[in-house]
Amino acid sequence: MIKVSASTLRNKIGVLLLDKPLSLKEVAEILEIKDKKSYSLLKNMFQKDRVIGFKDTDGSRRYRITDKEREKALKRKAKADKKAAKAAK
Image 1: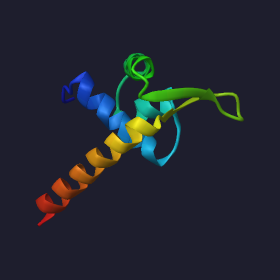
Image 2: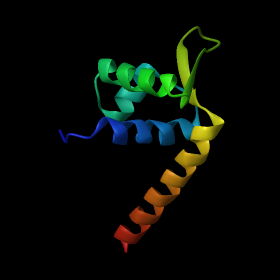
Image 3: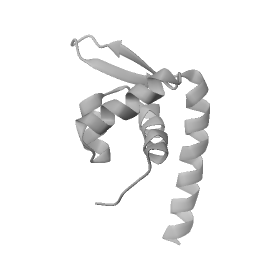
């Protein structure tokens, strides 16, 4: 398993949440990290107003990004897509 900084993981979470709100467990599964680490990252992002937590219709807690974070995440996604396209050539 490759060690990735917490900052990088938080940025990846921001990009993941562009598509749809996710639960803590879903974030952990996608990023292949423990639930505890996912909780810690999401808590930090919540405290810094990067994500908003809410109860979904099924009763589970989900997280979505704030409008301010959405702009930054879109830039990160575009940069990653461009880098991946360049590497594929």
